[in-house]
Image (cartoon, rainbow over all chains, first blue to last red; front, top):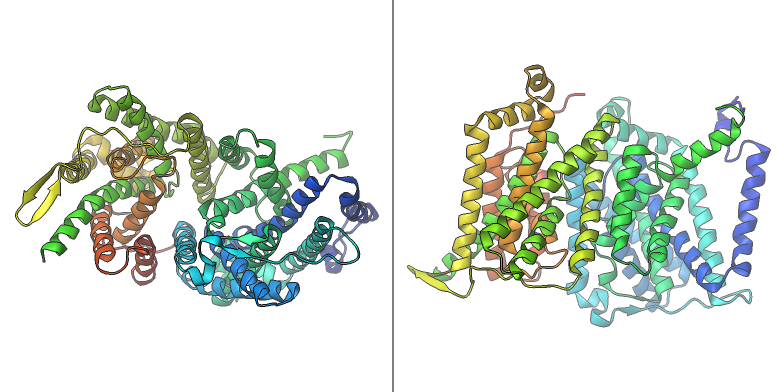
Length: 326
Length: 293
């Protein structure tokens, strides 16, 4: 059994040599993947990587801070279109990416203001309203959305002699690793504990000296930054965006990913993103079954396994750690 | 002036249906504190049942009855089959709200699977082209029927809640579940009935909305969001508030569509929600709520 002896040890990303070895193996596997798998699967993995970033952002808001938002599609659209316009004006990829996240974060602060007054279901509806409003603005305002034909985004020019798909894969997985590390650091810092305190009881958090206004707005800003980046990366992969992509169904999908993957867990976000992307692929011949699978999984997860896929994984790991005994 | 009256009347007929949707949402929210995200989808499923029966030339009353049965059945079944077990395992409020979202997804899938995603039109016995002239305004037969459905639905709910023993039990349960249980009220049955009645109200709204809109698996999404807006406007724990909110929203929307811009007609509902929530979070007729720590 591992014994935590100091605070520094508790914060460490990998405590035991076994974990370190497994992490290294995972990284090697991720690096090897595009050379052994078919191009189609590499593309799918790229999608999972970019969705994971969005789901992680959504999880910071829902899982860690306890603020339900159904307006994620709005932030996605804002990020994607900001990115699209910047790219068309000739901004380099990374600059446009950060700027897209920044614009979405600003929008997040604006949406965050009602959250100072609203709780639970009320906030869910207000943010749903934001999502619908953004959708309608983009549909009706052709200057922003490029009208019926949408915006075309120039492809990335691959470096290091890689093929386009492989280059995209490496870039996105690298970004995902960066965001994952950032999220780990965030949630084990003072800010992360303030978020969790707000989730568990905002009045008690305020009494204990957490500035509610600042941290609720910060949660919205960070979460929408992630979502904006997700939107931008998605736009880059698709190469062409129109407002119809970012409808309510997209927001619901992200929400489902958080719940099924596991609330308040970083690994769960990645599992959840993989789930919502792989299920439609597995059921490709029965498209109408996809919402049923989502729905049934939500019911099963909430009744039997409230920690989601990540909770399942924890239990499996515990079983093997304790193995001959149960 | 005549134009104003005409638009107000159109708004009232839509508003009476929003009121029915809002009543269902409020009824469930008041008794279980759960916002039912599957409200619209239950109504969609039930309306498609009506569609199947009406296309096979069954009488309208029979189709409406079957729809009500299906809607109420899904509501009651969901309460006893999913919510009660979840509560026994200690699911919190947020969990239960997410469960209704799960039900919504399942129902959407079922409707698409059975009836397809193509929009169809409901063969409705009451036409919207036959009109009457009342004073200066023109009323279609459908508008009259819609308003009548709204009035009858609200009145029946009023009688049920205020004049029957079951209604008394419902009010007691929504006031304080523990106390009601102690007094010997079978609260689970009462809450189950609340879910059934609420779903039934949504179904009536769905069946009367179907001839105005085209019937497709997502046709209730918009009215459902409007019902939410109406419920928030009137106060989420007040039944008369839901009716008032629905009618106000219907008229406001119709007038905004006529005099301002038609493109952002749907955004108006959300603007109203956000303004109401910021200025008077308990709604027009709702009681102020205080939180205990």
